[in-house]
Image 1 (cartoon, rainbow, N blue to C red):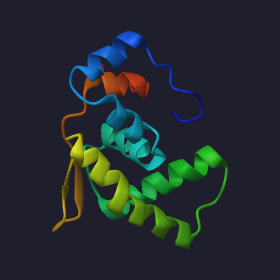
Image 2: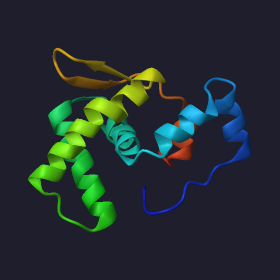
Image 3: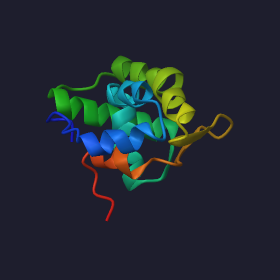
Image 4: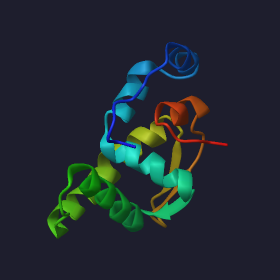
Length: 121
């Protein structure tokens, strides 16, 4: 998952570039909270923001071999709400319902899953 560098294939990049600005793709992929959100939504297509923050905090703690404190968990929830989810939503990868605080996977291109090494079979 996050323990290795992304193997970026030129064909995959060219395919993505025909649909989306590469700068936006790289911006999303450089945001660990956004990447972890995509991993999470691959398994669970709809999730509450609070649950997503739990999952992202756990994934970040696992990747960094640390323990998430309550204040770090809150920082992750705030980052998701103000930074990561808007990035993903602007690319139409997710839909976020402000009233219900639910995050739903939307139109994630298969090439993005390929870059993240997520098997879609």
